Image (tube, rainbow, N blue to C red; front, side, top):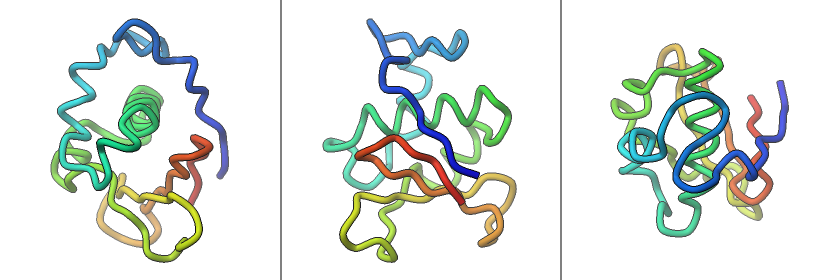
Length: 102
């Protein structure tokens, strides 16, 4: 599964993938690694994943948001577990491109 998440979804503090306000999603990603660098990419990806039913807000909060992956040393890749803490449920986000993949 691979898809790009358009950065244009974020405009004036509202994510247009639905009705979720950025302030709600900010709390989901608040403990993410490198938040100050990749906040917009984390916010957009988290909101899209919650709104399409892949993840829940509580999963983001429980796992602490996006975690830096050491498996992709040359890329800004972060992971998150949605559906349980197993490798099969791990989603990756390339923060530079917005691509979410397994």
